[in-house]
Length: 341
Image 1 (cartoon, rainbow, N blue to C red):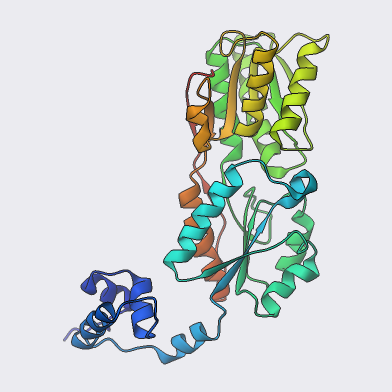
Image 2 (image 1 turned 180 degrees about the horizontal axis):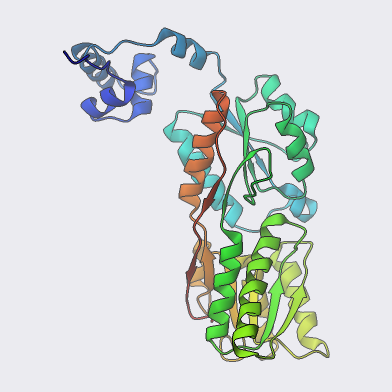
């Protein structure tokens, strides 16, 4: 005789045609659900013999139901973030937290040391931490992992790291950008970005790898140079591109920028100098922010799926909070070709 499986909260949500968070709220008499919905869920639960796991409920109730989110302010001057991608990613995380009935605590730049970051959870201010960007704090993150603080990171995914990271395939993104620019018949290449950041360094490595393979295949005389920026802002990129055009070296005919913001700034500076995109120079950005397709010309960019990223970051952090060991995940990158290249 088969043993009848006990109903789970997921089962009740499906049978009641509501979400799992709604079932959780209804069973807790939360004011966030209507009385009609609460009665409906309770009726379904009673009918199907759903039994509340009191131990699990007590564990949930001992939590703050708040997740701290730390932005990478350190990579931006005067703590001003001008790249929209980070806010698109924050929106994805916020949506995923909302679906789990979790509050979001946005931390200030003051939470920058291992001690202050760890205190966010030990003081019961939050159950765990999501870092949106490594910045230059990798050593701090490694030290934080030794303190058993539940956290996950949006950043470079590397096997040697002692913490869980979610990120795009930065190497492949750079590789795809270079292959596309090569297909346009370009020969003077410029990479724009601060390679002190692991993610951006991987993008450059993939870019150089594709160019190197092409050199071997066609023995082409490809020229590669770098424009390093320690400030991710539009203004810094525009100034650097303006100075480059005025310089003695030949202007590149192919540019891969490590962010869409930098790519747009370079296009603007080149247009001001009388150069045309993509006639004189092809430009590829990274992140595929919403403004990319509305820019003039529409920007070719490497896409990262922020909605999937946000859901994964939250899912893996919840596993870490439960005492489990979530594994890092690398997301696929895709080249979205538009008129700038």
